Image 1 (cartoon, rainbow, N blue to C red):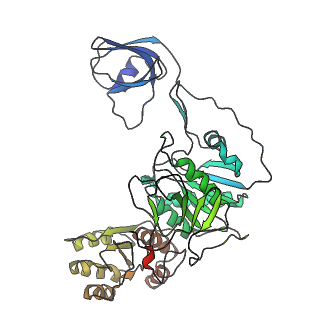
Image 2 (cartoon, one colour):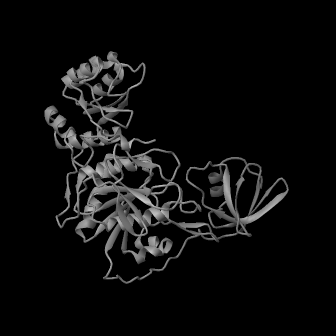
Image 3 (cartoon, rainbow, N blue to C red):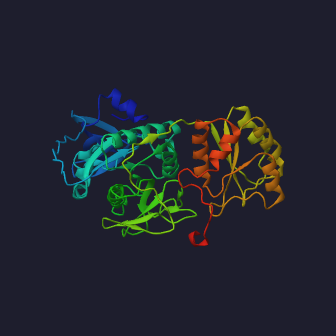
Length: 437
């Protein structure tokens, strides 16, 4: 039958579904195989066919003759429980997933994918983990990291606290890399943790030979057994597989779109290097919180209605006024240099502080710190009530303001909290040795 149009409409109307064996003829070329499920973001003009030789192809439905040869069932993977006995000589490490899976299992004969995130899934894909710890897996969210929200930070923090209260010796959080540094900062403020909380992810998916997923996960489990009781990010330290770095959750940033060593500590050194099951502290001058027997504490009140605005040549005060009129409770302004913006928008900033809306100044430069006392524009911003973020990363300042406004709405208290070091986000002394070259 010739057909033009939507593949879903066609399959529904022709009573053909995923798992069925069909013949498709296009331009006198015949293809036989099984209809497979497609990615959610593909167009609706194609079907995916698994050929008898095992290869998958995509075919346009347009002007195709399609014949149902045999009804089938949607491919699925039947996975038996591993029934692995707990090793009383090893620590219990919980691995929490916030999106996607660390260990997707694919049946290449049928095209079926098993997306569940359990301890069994992890160990099927990474059996070596059993050499290092007892592993417990749990899915909290299933989102792309760009879809992360403050409410999800709270949900993740609550799940982490549950794992700690349930006896976990350390917690690993699997997270997409694009917004991992926002989440690591948020968890740093929300959770007063007595043990390591380690965020990790992958720049390259597990089905690629160059994937960094396995090493990051393995080194994160090692870090979760360490004496460093902070929220950290564990990712590749180089482009090869030699080691991973442990970055403080409030001082780390994704700095490259695709490199495996994309995460870098800013204005400081990574806390430690992880390799071959060992933790090597990198800078003796950096103090870190050590593991205790204390209870985990959550401070999870947040005010998500915070604006994050970048200053640029020609920016209008109308942008500030817009957020004031829309009821935003706080503004983080990512200024230039030492913490500047065009003088034209200072009246709007003054309006914000007059209406008890805190305005925090961070720097686009990332390295160094804000100092609004040096130039006249900066001094005018101070007079308008702008609060310096010091050497905080702009993203960290944004997250901290969301958290701070959850604790208080009083402007003087907001300023005090924002300029108080809570989780290693502020350093009074900076060293040139940390500048990225």
